[in-house]
Length: 91
Image (cartoon, rainbow, N blue to C red; front, side):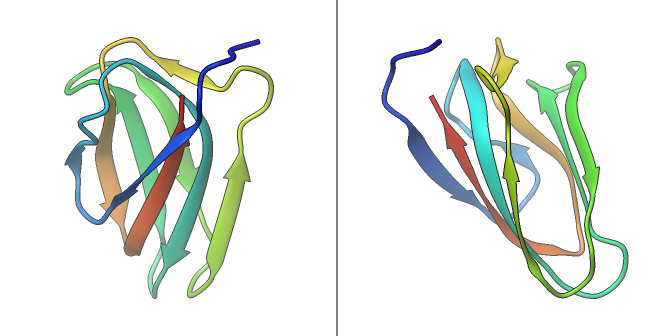
């Protein structure tokens, strides 16, 4: 189990979260109309580590079990469709 401090970052567009190597612990998502979808990869062009669809016009909390999802390069938001913002909790 990782013992490092959990931090958070609010993201409103695709691209690098700029946090470096990290473990995603939780994600808060605010969706709008359409078909909300979030895709996170391990760095730009890296493998997909999380790909989720959400209900419309709601706030969602996604808890990641155990030690979280490891991004060895950086947390990279490759798709942020019909989502106003996300907050990523990471360590």
